Length: 106
Image (tube, rainbow, N blue to C red; front, side):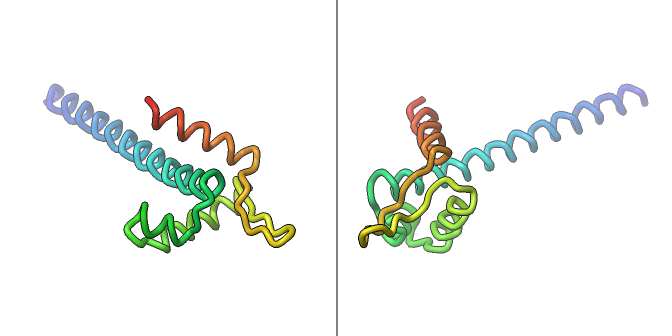
């Protein structure tokens, strides 16, 4: 009876660790998606529509939600000076782009 309880506890612990790793993986994947969109907007000059069409199977909602999020957390902003409509990465945004390349090139 004691051995059975110990095995059950070990299995529960292993499942909890496995779920934690899955959550971390999903979190990392989501942030990599954001960094990809950030890089395409600010470094390659792509539009939100182009990124949605070519990188995310026309999923405009995904790209616009991430764009809004990145503006809100101050990773980028739209430069409207002199008629320009370019996306500019902030210091924090540039750090995420660097992280994106670091992970992608592993």
